[in-house]
Length: 84
Image (cartoon, rainbow, N blue to C red):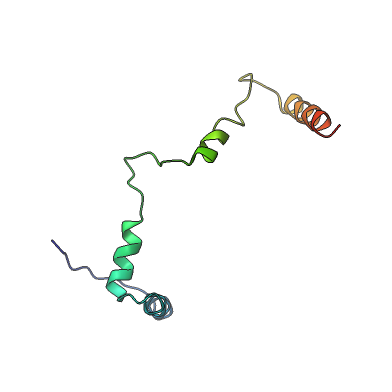
Protein backbone atom coordinates (compact mmCIF):
# COMPACT_ATOMS: atom_id res chain seq x y z
CA UNK A 1 0.00 0.00 0.00
CA UNK A 2 1.27 3.46 -0.84
CA UNK A 3 0.28 6.73 0.76
CA UNK A 4 0.67 10.15 -0.73
CA UNK A 5 2.46 12.75 1.39
CA UNK A 6 3.19 16.44 0.99
CA UNK A 7 6.66 17.81 1.73
CA UNK A 8 7.45 21.46 2.18
CA UNK A 9 11.09 22.10 1.25
CA UNK A 10 12.97 25.21 0.31
CA UNK A 11 13.78 25.43 -3.40
CA UNK A 12 17.54 24.94 -2.98
CA UNK A 13 17.11 21.76 -0.97
CA UNK A 14 14.53 20.38 -3.38
CA UNK A 15 16.76 21.07 -6.39
CA UNK A 16 19.76 19.51 -4.64
CA UNK A 17 17.74 16.39 -3.82
CA UNK A 18 16.43 16.14 -7.37
CA UNK A 19 19.95 16.46 -8.81
CA UNK A 20 21.22 13.77 -6.44
CA UNK A 21 18.35 11.43 -7.35
CA UNK A 22 19.04 11.98 -11.04
CA UNK A 23 22.76 11.27 -10.55
CA UNK A 24 21.80 7.97 -8.92
CA UNK A 25 19.39 7.13 -11.76
CA UNK A 26 16.44 7.27 -9.37
CA UNK A 27 13.20 9.13 -9.41
CA UNK A 28 12.86 11.71 -6.66
CA UNK A 29 10.18 9.54 -5.08
CA UNK A 30 12.40 6.44 -5.11
CA UNK A 31 15.32 8.43 -3.66
CA UNK A 32 13.21 9.67 -0.74
CA UNK A 33 11.80 6.18 -0.15
CA UNK A 34 15.32 4.73 -0.18
CA UNK A 35 16.53 7.28 2.36
CA UNK A 36 13.54 6.63 4.62
CA UNK A 37 14.10 2.86 4.44
CA UNK A 38 17.56 3.41 5.93
CA UNK A 39 16.19 4.94 9.12
CA UNK A 40 16.84 2.64 12.07
CA UNK A 41 13.92 1.09 13.91
CA UNK A 42 13.82 2.91 17.25
CA UNK A 43 12.66 -0.28 18.97
CA UNK A 44 15.64 -2.36 17.85
CA UNK A 45 19.20 -2.12 19.08
CA UNK A 46 21.69 -1.54 16.28
CA UNK A 47 23.77 -4.50 15.14
CA UNK A 48 27.40 -3.65 15.80
CA UNK A 49 30.33 -5.05 13.88
CA UNK A 50 32.70 -7.29 15.88
CA UNK A 51 35.31 -4.52 15.88
CA UNK A 52 32.85 -1.99 17.29
CA UNK A 53 31.62 -4.53 19.85
CA UNK A 54 35.21 -4.96 21.03
CA UNK A 55 35.27 -1.26 21.89
CA UNK A 56 32.10 -1.33 23.96
CA UNK A 57 33.00 -0.82 27.59
CA UNK A 58 36.55 0.33 26.93
CA UNK A 59 35.95 3.52 28.86
CA UNK A 60 34.11 1.94 31.80
CA UNK A 61 35.75 3.01 35.01
CA UNK A 62 37.13 0.39 37.35
CA UNK A 63 35.64 2.23 40.29
CA UNK A 64 32.38 4.13 40.10
CA UNK A 65 33.69 7.18 41.94
CA UNK A 66 37.07 7.41 40.26
CA UNK A 67 38.30 10.98 40.62
CA UNK A 68 39.34 12.83 37.44
CA UNK A 69 42.93 13.30 38.69
CA UNK A 70 43.23 9.57 39.40
CA UNK A 71 41.87 8.78 35.95
CA UNK A 72 44.43 11.15 34.40
CA UNK A 73 47.26 9.51 36.37
CA UNK A 74 46.13 6.04 35.27
CA UNK A 75 46.06 7.21 31.67
CA UNK A 76 49.58 8.63 31.92
CA UNK A 77 50.79 5.38 33.52
CA UNK A 78 49.20 3.46 30.67
CA UNK A 79 50.94 5.65 28.06
CA UNK A 80 54.31 5.32 29.80
CA UNK A 81 54.01 1.56 29.86
CA UNK A 82 52.79 1.40 26.27
CA UNK A 83 55.61 3.50 24.82
CA UNK A 84 58.59 2.29 26.88
